[in-house]
Amino acid sequence: MSMDNYESILASITNVIDQYDSSTYLTTESLLEALRTLSRGIYHLTVIHTQAGEAHNAIQHNFSGSAARGLIEADHEVPEYRISRKILDACNRVQSAMIMELSIMKKEM
Image 1 (cartoon, rainbow, N blue to C red):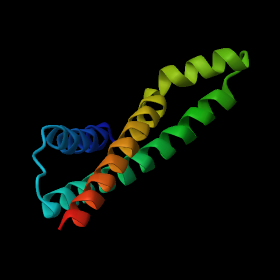
Image 2: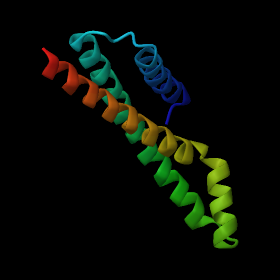
Image 3: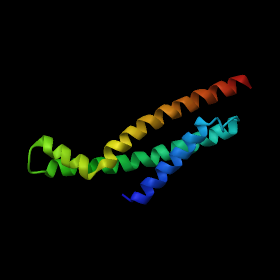
């Protein structure tokens, strides 16, 4: 997994969320485009999370010491696994909020 790709995906997601937070998306069309961009970012981050999970599990499984120490080692070696899970959780909440706001905007039309 490329760290540049990971950073690029996070930058794209952060940009969309920052713009959404600043109320930049005042039209249905711009909010819909932001939602599409966020959804693409979530997909790509999910792929990275899956790959990181596989690497994390391999390190933990192949560790020769205790299971607890293997988990610590895997967390240290593949920090993207835990970090990406937390980011995905937050992104999904923002995505839900955007969907609800889009629904409200469409009802007001």
